[in-house]
Image 1 (tube, rainbow, N blue to C red):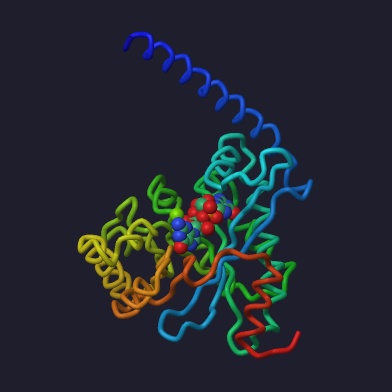
Image 2 (cartoon, rainbow, N blue to C red):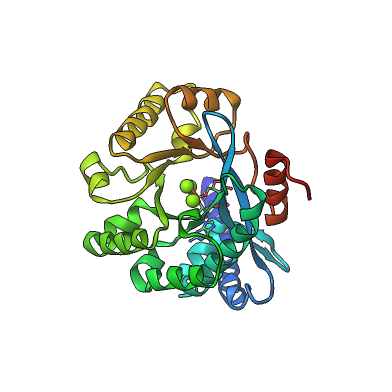
Length: 283
Ligand code: C2E
Ligand code: MG
Ligand code: MG
Ligand code: MG
């Protein structure tokens, strides 16, 4: 009996494997030209100042609406883009679009314009002339460089440290800000963080999820905040889903926060509406 079940199981497993491979190949093909066909686009998740809950910026997040499969998760298609050598092209479009949208927001919040934060793949850091790409995109825009933030993951900068340090330095010379994303997951120590001249860190949401119930996660988040502050860096908490998490992080001195409790990612026009509401500026 067990043997038969095992055999069926195996057959089923094989079939799902085949389906997964076929689907993946299909996605690889379809990702070519997806931006040009208007299937790829950006949404913006609001980022707030923890102290006064002011809207201070947005993270640009890529979305793919596949004509047949519907929404494909960025964790899936960004990986496909990296493997198929499409990430530089798509990454360039993302950068230009985010800069263009953020330039539109400048007059909506005259006292304190919001920043736009763009995710950069480790592949873009390794293979391409990222600094030239960023400089070129900024040149054709009215957005001052300090309102463009770039998010790099720890693993991206750990791979080839001397080179990564050089790229980071040249990016910051342009005046853009650089963040370490998903911080804590690859655990960089204090000395490593000090050598990486970045403007701040984003605490990965896996540490925020249980911050109210798990003393270890709270200790880790608190340590990251203290460590970053001692280096003059800013700290963003990702994945704030409850008011209690927000209050606790504020009490611990975390600077900025984003998460579903504060706001889901929205279209550029909707983000502009949020800004208008905050600034009491008419439409
Ligand atoms: P990330 O940069 O860490 O982005 C944060 C992710 O957390 C986003 O998922 C966001 O929707 C989600 N999130 C925000 N608040 C909450 C919350 O309160 N709870 C939960 N459970 N999740 C929350 P998303 O949009 O699916 O993106 C996943 C990842 O895909 C991103 O992680 C980033 O690594 C990558 N990605 C997205 N857009 C781009 C892009 O334009 N370029 C590159 N290279 N990677 C991108
Ligand atoms: Mg990010
Ligand atoms: Mg992140
Ligand atoms: Mg993440």
